[in-house]
Image (cartoon, rainbow, N blue to C red; front, side, top):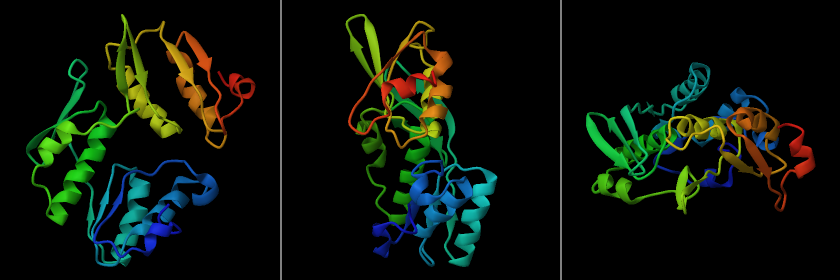
Length: 223
């Protein structure tokens, strides 16, 4: 959250805001503007803030708070993003340096540029290229081969994350209209929008239940 988050008692030398999307609305607010204001509460006086890719309207909100706090704002921009689905890698360029990430997806690249930028500011960027090659987040477009078939695991649980998953999925060699989706979602999430986004990409959809999940019969209505 930022403003009301318990970690905000720490006088950090740097703050990072990865993204601003609709999630945890009960705590953060129902609009992106309200959520941005809450997240910007992590910005410390005269300490740098590293920000991910956001809309111009959200950028203005965070810029204004940075100006008020005399906090330098850094918004990293990467270039030349190339997804290699055979090697399970993503190549990109940031500040004229080439990096290879042991993950797939443009969102993973955006997050990596935040890490690189923060590391440069804090002065512990030695060995960063090698670290990015080794790090992999489970359930973030994670591909597993099972016999002749492939299973893609992704923990996307809000509309913004679902869009990122689909953005990578449609570019992949695994994207076929006969694919099956296994989907379960926490009852507190915006499952109506998530279902609407996913609906047309799969031939069959299997709904899963777990503790605190949206009941299958309720979720079924939106597919």
